[in-house]
Amino acid sequence: MATLLPPPKRQKLYHGVPEPEPEPSKSSKNILVQFVSEDNGSALAPAVSLPADVSREGLEVLVNKLTNAEDPVPFAFHIDVPEDSEAKTGQPTRIIISKSIQNDVLDHASHSQSFTEEDVFVVRCTPQSVFRVRPATRCSATLGGHSSPILCASFSPTGNMLATGSGDATARLWDLNTETPSHTLSGHKGWVLCVEWEAMERVLATGGHDNHVRLWDPKTGKPIGDALKGHSKWITSLSWEPIHLNPKNPRLASSSKDGTVRVWSTATRKLDYTLGGHTASVNVVKWGGGGTSGFGLKKGVLYTASSDRMVRVWDAEGGRQLHVLKDHAHWVTTLTLNTDFVLRTGPFDFTGKRPANDEEAQQLAQKRYNALLSTTPELLITGSDDHTLFLWSLFPSSTSAPVDSSAPSEGKGKLKPVTRLTGHQRQISHVAFSPDGRWAASASWDSSVRLWEGRTGKFVATLRGHVGAVYRLAWSSDSRMVVSASKDATCKIWDLKTYKIKVDLPGHMDEIYCVDFVADKVVSGGRDKHVKIWKH
Image 1: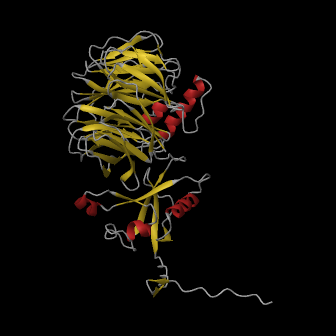
Image 2 (image 1 turned 90 degrees about the vertical axis):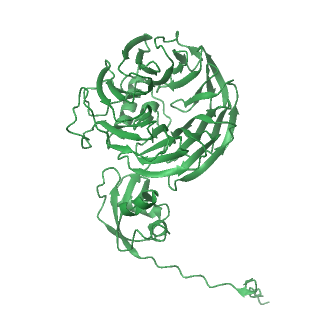
Image 3 (image 1 turned 45 degrees about the horizontal axis):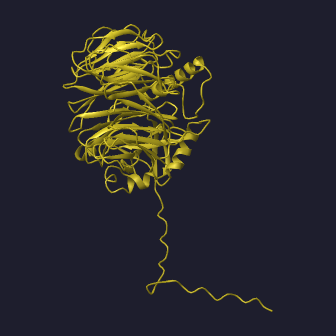
């Protein structure tokens, strides 16, 4: 019997009209592309002629082939907007290539006027971290316990534990694997204003409104000895000595409203020395590594920012003053180093390996510090109530040109900032470098977050979306996202490709004072007395 063929398919009709013919795909023109390194602006390869619709992934494969990379490196690509076209609009100064040059530049409504197909497209290539952090999207736990607003929160360097400090005069430790409280640290007689983990996770330091600094054992939740007393007013910030300089017993620096900074030896629990010189409250202290070029700074550098409008830089070995930076016109309230993240996490990186002993920890921490500073010196950004920020390079590395060769390297030489970062309309509340040091983000009372190039201080974009003052920022460890906490009771995770909100995290009942980001977890706390943990 012959096989019966099925009846021919009926032609599909759209409201009685036959299906339109598929459009022929537009042929893409070839364009000249010059790939240059974001680090030093050098060409990675001669200019190549490519179809304009090569995808971003295709560009990545091509750059890895052209540079003969042994292991393929993920890259981010961007094209700088020509100077004359950006001045009029105040728009972002770089175009991120997320699909293809055709899609993001030539066919784009606002960028297509600035470029033609005859131009040589200078594509800047920025290497990205080889791991990717997933954005937090949901609140996985709301933890009660504090009976007053939560003023500070900090993840431990491995991200396994969380410490929060509150107005109820206690700090609390939380276990992040089970998302439950593990210890309550009571001892302070006033608000706990700052919590700081030692980079090996062996000790937690807290500073209080009762003028005392206390040390705690995070495993047992017990205090290590009595309080460190000496300040005559409350503690404003704490900073630990970097692990690559002192892996066994790192010292602790505390800054205070009384205008001094005290450096404590945690082994003997005695005061090492006091830094006087500021004439008003010292708002921030940071313990930096002092760069890799030596400069005779064996124990790193202390940076202090104060309400006397000065930033002072000290040799941490004995407290000798190196520089006074006098350019701000109002209180200096916040300060960040491009090495903050590697100093805070010490020997721990994304692989999660634990060092076997102090020596190995020191080598790992030193390796991470040197890797970050292989293409840039240790940079500093200070933010002030004068609505501006300054970028400083005080210890030029051998890999970069000195910023100001006429400036004296010692003594009270007035060093000039690399650049001034202007644009905020109100006081700066917080500034933070990204973990790879390529970006900096600043938060302000004008409800905006601004992004800057971390090495040049050039403005990149404004992140708008908050409807109240933005208090704190935190970066994801892969430097691809930044999270902000605001008076408007929301946290927002920002996408650095589009400069738009990636994820909005509402849920708090009142303003949020602190936020931190580790692995793919975000923690926030504020006036509603609850700690919220956000996960993917």
